[in-house]
Length: 112
Length: 111
Image 1 (tube, rainbow over the protein chains, first blue to last red):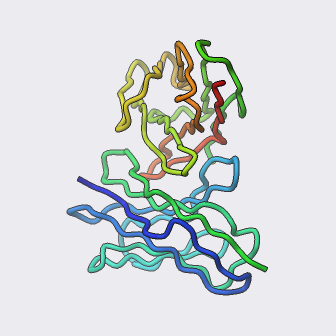
Image 2: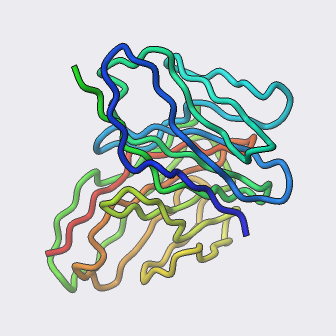
């Protein structure tokens, strides 16, 4: 069965430092992969998505993610974190049956 | 960008009350979903619909029910609320390409 794993429950990064959030998936073929961000008390906003083609995808707010088939990973990165990036981040997978499977989320804290 | 609306944003209600959480969208998308989000953040699919008169249960068993009489509306009902139903409920639509657009959510507290 398909699944998504986000191994880090919490991550703290200093403002201005680089960020990498990990995401691993389990699926027999190439999935559609997504990263969402959720600010406190809000719904989820799509940051970026991967379907096929270039394995490095650019998203909104300066985020990017790289799909690595050999590692079954889709890690999210940002070169310089801003205090406003503090939020929960969810990785998700769609196997083509129109149902998203989410990871458990990673809470990003940004220190001054 | 598709618009999706959820009301109310916050609801505090007593045990045993019947409640309906509203979800509506303006763009006529067929596929709609309800997720329950625990305080620890994890999202669980509880209901989905692929069109009018189509409803299915999701991966997480829920005592709630849904209906899809009109394309625009996908309400979720709890006939008798209990403290165990306290959670955030997120509605979403599939906007094509496998991704979803989410509403702002309803945070339900049953006391």
